[in-house]
Amino acid sequence: MLASRKLEIDTLRGLACILLVSYHVIGSSSTQGMRIDSGVLRDINDVFIYIRMPLFSFLSGLIYGMRPLKSNFIPFLKKKTARLLYPMLTVGTLYALLQFYVPGTNRETINFWLMHIIPVGHYWFLEAIFLVFCLVTLFEFFNLLNSYLTSVFILVLSIVIYLLGVDVNYLSLDGFFYLLPFFLFGMMNSRFPSAVQKMLTVSLAILVSYGLSVYFDFDDRALRIGIGFSFCFTLFLLKIKMKWLSYIGVYSFSIYLFHVFFTASSRIFLNYFDVLNTSLVFMVGLTAGIAGSIVIDKLLSSNSWMTHYVLGR
Image (tube, rainbow, N blue to C red; front, side, top):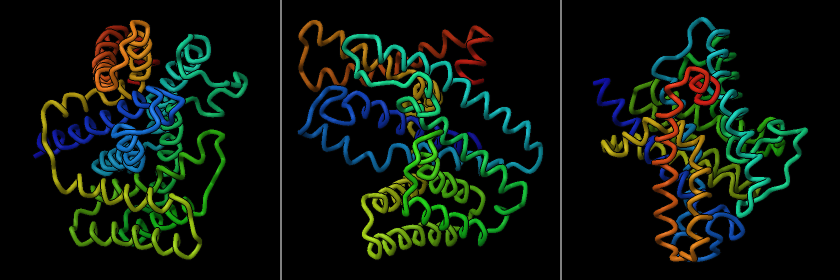
């Protein structure tokens, strides 16, 4: 049973990795990545913006909910500091420096004095999910997540706060409020196994989002909640098991950390030799981002310092 559950979760992790790497291969806009502003790849990339990071956060909550924190709160936060913030500081700083100085990358202006206070690239997720764990630890200390009703109240409150908008980029606070509802939803799917409770939770979340969006005329925040919750819950119910996706999922953290180095370098390499076929550039970038990250993980794992400060293990 446990092996089957692990295969399901790693399969979804693998899927999340493919969506994430594809996103950075194509680019968030026509001025980044492959620099395409129309076509099938651009349309797919834009649609999956509502799914990628919610799925990562949902899975984090799902895994946490299997073994929720009951004691040893300080050691738990120390482990999360090592797991999330050490790689953010080491790999994230390297990424910022290479992006700023290497020709051909999607160069951005960087305030080196505020690096990581203002999040660097996609490493905002590490900072935001760390804040989520800090808040969840506080909730656990006061036993606020033991009851389904109080958990629902906290979930709905987190959705309302996100919908109302917290546009504070420092320390990835906006990312924290974005990820929190999906983490809590994932946790509740593990912690409260009743099918009725699960259906009630996702229905309530979508209803609250829709109701508030109509009343306050919100932007696409309500869509992020509605589509993100629906998609995560559907994947959870499908219980997909694919060994090749599961293999990728095992290395999901390293893929998250390192894929951008390989997607960018493969694109620069192909452009240098005037290889401009869109499908080929996309497939090479996607493959390089995933395979290269797995190789780096295996190489760094042989060194204890690298394992601890770079891989966060």
